[in-house]
Image (tube, rainbow, N blue to C red; front, side, top):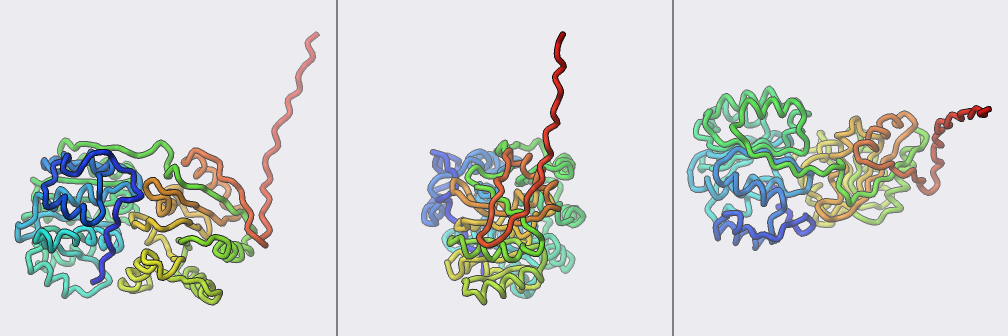
Length: 403
């Protein structure tokens, strides 16, 4: 299995503290330094000391803030060498699980750490082998983990720490019943770590049920998207949407992530851009797991500059090289817009989010503008006629002449 590589924190806001200050031991700090992690980010600096003490922690921070290391590092230090599953990390998507596994993999050989990644879409045999070799930390998607638990290949009775990663996204995908089933396999006495970008009401209910006196680290910004994002809106007639997309790809030279609503749309865009000579790949639900990982790694390594994706790439995936995110059509919700936008301007970097929409999207555009705290500039693409918005005229009031 090919895992996504751990991304150094060069573009992420960092504190002036050291990882040693947080209570991490020398051999863990040494691996971090060799991997390019110099100083902890704010979420790491606030969450790691409490997690090392075994305390329940709720970590709320925007995408790209370093949440993965904030929960992985305490688990690595506290639970390695156990010889059986002591920590369980639940992830909403295969890509996020593989990315977390990539960070854990940095510590396997230097520290003798044993881990396993349990996801669907790949053969189950190698996962069973990893579990038999004594994985102390398991990262998994809920469905495949339950498969292993029911087979008896993943024994969860000694788990000391449960992590719910990207918890809001797990609820969006309808994983709450599966999470509840997983919890039934776990000991009641355990540490619980929950990390999320938002705190909707279903998560608050889950927190009240499973967590004990948690420390809440809330570093969410007042505005919903990163400060370094330049938002652009291209309102066009529906028949001109494809023409607008091609014009933007031709106009912008940097690395680009394009979101399309359906798998068939992603295949169309991939064929069209490939015919025009653009280095491009795509990822969606009909692609194999290996193809999806290779598409992500190809963008990271510069093998192609354009990645076309459905919403499976919208959350939690670190692509710090992405300069430009394009939405082909307005996303379904404000939350979807925020999470897609989070694929660029990671940490202290800057980026552009361009949305191609029609007059039907105006109501959602207004809600997005309220969420991000600014009006999105209306822009035009070369050779594409823009849709002209009709703004409501201000009512004129007659002033009575005072006699």
